[in-house]
Amino acid sequence: MAGTSLWRNSNYRTFLGIQTLSAIGDSFSYVAIPLLVLQVTGSLVQMGIVTGLTGVASITTGVFAGVVVDRFDRRTLLMICDGARCVLYGTVALVFLVAEPSWLIYLVVPLAGVFSMIFQVTYVAVVPAIVPTDQITRANGHLYATYAIASVAGPALAGLVAAAFGAAAAIGVDAITFAVAAIGVLFIRLAARPAQPGPADAEAGGVRNEFLAGARFVWAHPLLRQLTLLLSLLTFLTYGLTDTVIFRLKDELGQSDAVVGYVLTAGTVGTFVASSVVARVRGRLGFGPSWISAFSLAGLAVAGMGLVHHVPALAVFMAVMLLGSGVAGICSMSLRQEITPSHLLGRVTAAFWTIHSALGPLGAATITALAAGFGVTPVLVVVGTAMVLIALSGAFSSIGRAGVTPAAEPALEGARS
Image 1 (cartoon, helix red, strand yellow):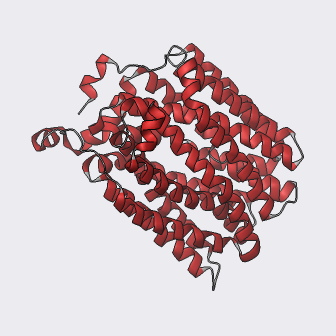
Image 2 (cartoon, one colour):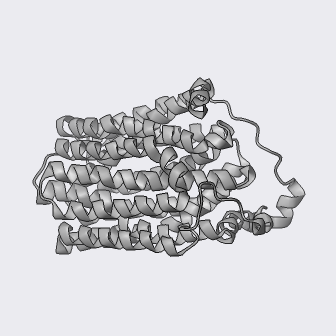
Image 3 (cartoon, helix red, strand yellow):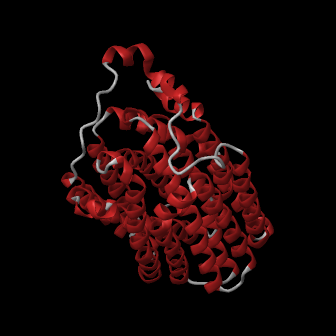
């Protein structure tokens, strides 16, 4: 069985363990950064600005991240990215022991976003070098599961640490997890990559051509093109969602940092469920119906978060939202890994993320500003409704016709440079 052979793969298990450590670090940042901004500025708008700046840094990095990932040793890149985030977050934790300079947050968090983007592109690109193609969706499900398991404890612990010692202390724990993860990368073995175009080919194409190769591949494939367009709209709506929910818990519902951690922890249960069911759901329904249904469910949950006024109910809707977005995200990532040639995978991943994330920073600033001005409830209802409509529109495109394993398009040969 595919699942059994995966668990017998010691290299895969090592990679899984390292990703769990990185997930713990991410989960602390997920809570600690917004809390630190709120602690220093007391402003939802400033939370949105920090999120937006981080998004701009990530999107800018995405322009060249794919070329970096396809040109350089991917294991080394994983280690560098974890190490850099350890240093950056560790600096914040140490400085905030003696002062609270808000400028440091605006400097460090976007820089961390740069390394996070390179790490994420590299992470997606190395999965096919660790597991066979027919096990990619299952492996991605496992990786999401470890992320969910780490995240179940992470936000709650981050909330408790922030409540007891301050948000900066939680960021210090974040730095430690990235340090351990960086060391662990040394024990990963990756399969050799297929031969890539020679120096003459690269020189003939030029650096600009390398940057555009991933984007051309995405645009030439009808399914990836439609996904990119719809995800651009969805990203605009959801990029600042966590900041908005945290603000509602703290400002509108008067909850503590610990409760914020508990709610976000409860939400990650949805991610765990998504990772457990995605392979079966996609195998039974096919890619298109799975993606459309999952994002429609997420939209309904976002609207629900705007309508309820009790913390347990909000936590349930948070879990449902992450269940839907988790299933859709795993399906989308697995699809790209299955149909993209190895030598292009970094550039295609970076192009896909960069293009559909381009509206994210503007969305974060817009949604948080609207929530601050008109209240979180109406904004979440409108956002959730729009998400459902956008997801359902996919039924009238190539997404709705996509089967269990969509094939690569013959016309893509020209993009494989």
